[in-house]
Every structure is written in C-alpha cells, then in structure tokens.
Length: 392
Ligand SMILES: *Cc1c(COP(=O)(O)O)cnc(C)c1O
Image (cartoon, rainbow, N blue to C red):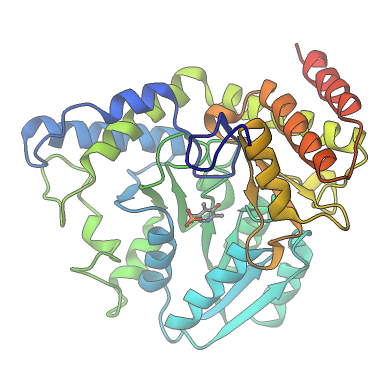
C-alpha cells in the first residue's frame, strides 16, 4: 500500500468537507480576538455584509455557528408550527431527511418522493399545491449531494410564491458553485454554509431569511430562543452595535472572510464556470470509459458533484479504498439509500479545477482495474481533455 490510512491523502476530491483554499487556511491562523473587542465587532459586521453581497440579499444573512445541519434543523424548529401543513420534496437522502425534522414540529406532512437518481418535477408540485390549498410550507433540497442531482428550485419557488406558501431551501452544496441565490427561488429560509463550494471548513451556516419568515418565526411561540437552535436570537447580531447571544466561532469567521473575498474577487460567474467545466469533463470522461452516471439525465447532473454508478459486481467501499491506497485520492461514498451504489467525485471550491477531473478519472479507473474491472482510462482522459480544451 503506497498511501497508508494513517497518512494524509494526496488529493481529496470529496463532496464535502473539502480542503480549504490556502488563503482560507492562512486566515484561520489570524489572532482569535475577544468577541466583544471593538475590532472583532466591526469585523463581524463586515463579514456578514460580504456574505450578504455574495448571497445577493437585500438584508444581512444570519450566521449560525455550527455546520449547516444546525441551520436546517433551526429552520424547521423556528418556522413550522403544529398547525402548518408542510409539503416536503424528496429526491434524495437530504430532502427525505428534512421531512423527519418537519414532522417533529407539525403532524401534517405531505411528501412528493421520486427515485433518488431523479429530480422533482415542478408540475407535480403545482398539482399538489392545487389539490391541497392548505399547504403552508414547502421544503426542498437544491442539490441532493448523496445523489449528485439538482432540483429546479427556481421553478418550484415561483409556484410556492404564487400559492402564498413559505419555502425552505437547502442550498448547502450548491450555493457558490452554481448560479443560485435566495431571491432567485423566492426562498423564505435559504440555508447554506461555508464548508462546500466556498472552500472553508465545515462549521458555519448562513441563512437568507425573508421579511415574512421573520414575522412568522416571531409569531411562533415555540420558535427556539435562548437556544443553540435559535434563529431569532441572531437577528441583530450582525450589527456591531448589538450583542451576540452566544460566543461566535471567531476563527471560523476569519476563514469565511477570506473565502468570501476569494469568491467575490474571482467573480461568481467565473467560479460557477469552473465548477461546471470540471463536472462536465468528469462526466464525459466517465462515459468514454463505459461507465454510467447515477443521475437519470445530464440535465439534472450537479456541477458540484459527479455521482458515478458502481459497476455490477464491484464493491464500492473497496473501490474507494483502492483509489486511496494506490493513488492517494479520496472520493465520497453514497449515503443512506445511495450507499454502496455510487461513488461521488466532488468539484467544490478549490477542487473545482478541470485538471482534477483528469486526476479523478485516473484514480477511479485505475482502482476499478485493480479490482478486476478493467476500463479504458486513456479514453476517459482524452474525452475529459477534449472538454477542457474546447473551453480554453
Ligand atoms: C453537506 C450538506 C449538508 C450539511 O450536512 P453535513 O452533516 O455536513 O453532511 C446539508 N445539506 C446538504 C445538501 C449537504 O450537502
């Protein structure tokens, strides 16, 4: 074994956490200031305003100091009341998972579930809203990461908005890797984080919250306050004039600051383009190697994660072990229902560079060969290069 388990891999091509940009790593080593030091109060406000700019919001986002599951659970706890009829859209493990949280706060849960290699059809949402005018809240995962598939949230959001409902969106693994923003999809609570396409460590949540969502949360007597699950507690914390309810993650804010600087300086459109190009080169390469994508169609394949179906007879866990031991390359497994059926190649933040498509195809194809399932790796690389060079 060239790369032992107890040594760092050479390249981490996962769908999160991802290695952080080097500028972010350097920022993490800035002084850890006292949170009420005037310098930190001003800095915190500056970072939140930068996040507002990146998310194209008209009001500052809420930063919660934990990885984005905190934001998702907090959204369910704060917005959903026992009277609300919730329509949960499930096209994968995360979408399905949100339904379990929703059920904790309201017994009235409706669901549209599709096979986990497909996307939600907006028409099915339109039909459901028509059939159930009492639906108050709709929840959807934009990029269901364990499937590497994208839901049409802008279309879904327009329908929910016309219906007068509230929309909760999990955009944790799509924001900053493709063209998606809270207002584009009429989100009332839009949950994203620092640890995926922004290329920072996985410990902060950013929430875009609409005015009407603030009103609804404030009117909900059960919405958490004086709690780590609270969104309400943090409403004014972005302002240097207002206190923090709890100690914010000072070092993580330093990292987020650098990640946002990189994103805005490179230009969001350029960042999205290299995510899309890396994913396209990876998909073309896999196909040229005779392999199948997990996504039912190219149109719903994510630009931030490529999920490849594990060939029949191949042990997916052993395949990833082989890629790591032989080449030092780490991929993500599936999760829950998709575990063992696919391997995920992440294109997020610093790994959304086309050359990593070549590394991924080489390691994936080489590992398959080592397990006795030979594929034409050279053809895959040629196909990936053709995509990359056509864009040059
Ligand atoms: C990563 C991710 C989250 C955050 O949860 P983890 O515990 O980091 O997996 C939430 N939603 C989606 C879609 C994600 O990809």
